Image (cartoon, rainbow, N blue to C red; front, side):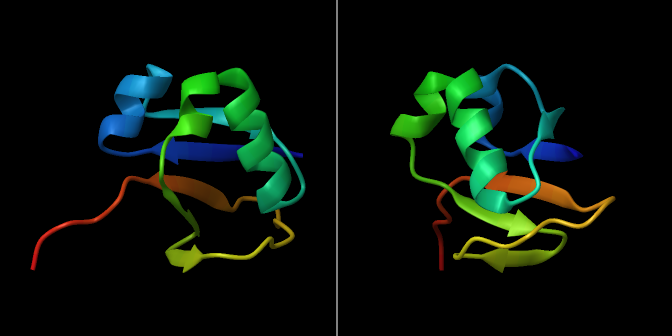
Length: 76
């Protein structure tokens, strides 16, 4: 299944794009495929969101869901 992946902040510089399609039926698979395609991404700290929800565990993806890679947050 194809999933739209969006990159934010410095992650767009690392991947060279703001979004792309990635194969995967689970969040773990999508993250692994993105890190394989963009090896420098695997060296970065980032959070992931499915839709508008930040997730920390692996989840099964549904059709038309978007996965976002978010850089570390700072501020106060």
